[in-house]
Length: 538
Image 1 (spheres, rainbow, N blue to C red):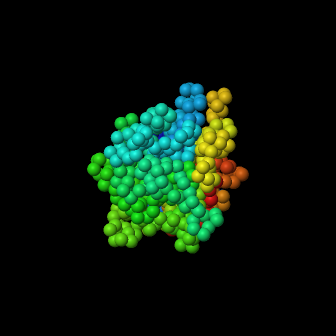
Image 2 (spheres, rainbow, N blue to C red; image 1 turned 90 degrees about the vertical axis):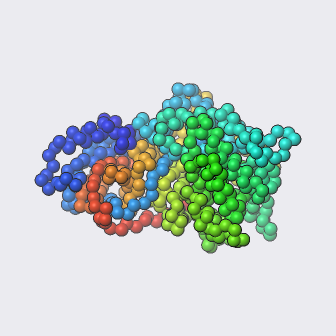
Image 3 (cartoon, rainbow, N blue to C red; image 1 turned 120 degrees about the vertical axis):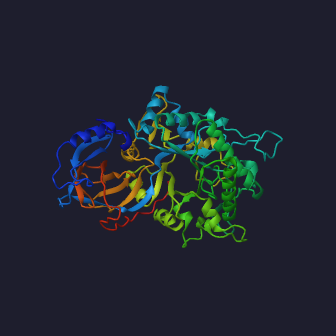
């Protein structure tokens, strides 16, 4: 019986459970109760124990059976819809994948994306033009002008050919082949140079007045380029659609205003409001249903009343200073809020979700720890996308730098900057690859969850055992349980008057699935959210 399919695809699992159900339940069982039915599970604990089947257990009445830890589920408290786990399709990662043999490249993509034989990653971030994570200079936009041309308001020179030439489009198509349920969001790091005040695609920094160590981003979006930048996004979405790739959502801009010299751009609060409305207007005109995520920056930059350095971008939903835009207009144009974890308190996600009513997403992180993913899901994140997860054996090649040097030698940056220990390591000599063990534990979530699943509230960490729980409209439950202990833990899972006890292997992430019909108004208790430490960047 395979252990590598989602609930809805698990015909072998269903067959086994059906066979087990032939064992007569006690007379206490009722037609609308799960008592007597079975729970199936798999677990991963290192590369030698990946997606292994666990013994099925029977659901029984709540008899208070002893266990090392408990998970108490409250299905009356419904939270966010699951939208995916995955990684970025950045040019550094793609370039390294293309250094593999064709056979090994297929194996790598299949291991990452296939929900049957692999991790089933299903949410990916595309880059609109060049980010900092590229191997092949120069940085590029999709509207590079020929000599003698200074403006292109009709976007006559727009082209995604570089994405095709550098295999980004082909990589996406491979992912689609192995996981047809995969979805894609996209982010731009900057508008084309000619749309900016400094006519420069890369970032440009300057010291803030009176400071010796605090910088600001010089390159800003021109006010008269807001509408054409919105149309630039439309052209991108349409160009990818012609390649058979639907872009589910875009972010307004990656890390607006960040003070760096790799591709970046500043758009202040007023411009963000105008750009959001322009994008949605252009989407409607083009007949696009693409979503728009605001922020796409750190927790800290959303709101921090105690800092004079934070952007406090939550103000985008306030009325504009000149009264021309109402905050509600911008809120109505917003389909989600995107966050990065490099500075600030992750609880900002939960608070922003509560304040705005908009879904929140983790759109860029380098943290592969399954405990972090589970914590962020418990803080209402609908998706979790990691950043730049394929490098070579030396941790290259890429063009990221913390230096605030407008005249930096980019070739030297590429030679010297290394990001080792990403999810996938490509040996460019042997043309082979290896993966980190976290791949398999992240697969314990991505393989078994889909857009039909919504998180329900559950109790917090107990004796080294943490959890996150989802259900679908048919009352099929998926509980991801992590045992951080060095020994096996018995865990009692309680749902209304039903419970079962499972044995979670040491240092493992396990996934349990079962069907259980319970009254929608039933409450076990009101769980509280685990305190989560601040996360700082690399």
